[in-house]
Image (tube, rainbow, N blue to C red; front, side, top):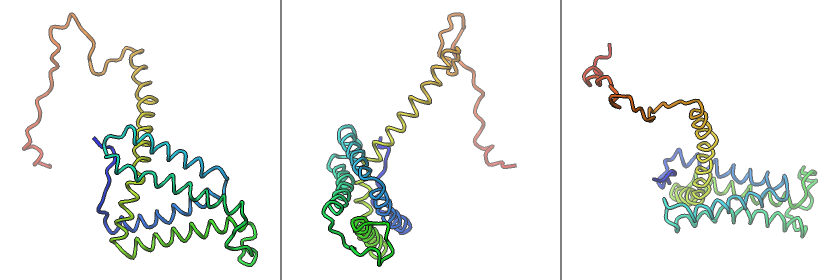
Length: 208
């Protein structure tokens, strides 16, 4: 059974939320890109690894649909390549940064912020202005994020199972606890457990 559901027909409210998240995504990518030079490479490697794991192990969705998952790691790599190129070549959109009040940012950083800001703003505006285009972007984004969500959800569930439930089960065994009463009892006349009869459904209509 699939653990992740892809919604292909979002409501107007969901499109508005998606437009906000679209803009925030590019803002966050800009902040991460300006923090350290290798941060985007690490994120691209992680999302790429999630894509590979999903392609190999995810049988809930067809492989063709999961190929959209390449868009996120490749997009992050493109952001890193642009930032790296502008820093290396000195090709900046705003060389006279002092006149704009960004003395602490170099031209490459400003170029990256402008490109990501435009991508976030134009994408969010397109989603809000055209519901048809917004739904197309929404569906594409959902399928692009599918491998990441599928892999991370399985990792988290595995951590909960092995780090929470498994130790609890081992401790209960060491203490001799048997809450499901599965232990063999040779002296017991029967293993039948008497249960009280269920209440009649008619009593649920009597609220007082």
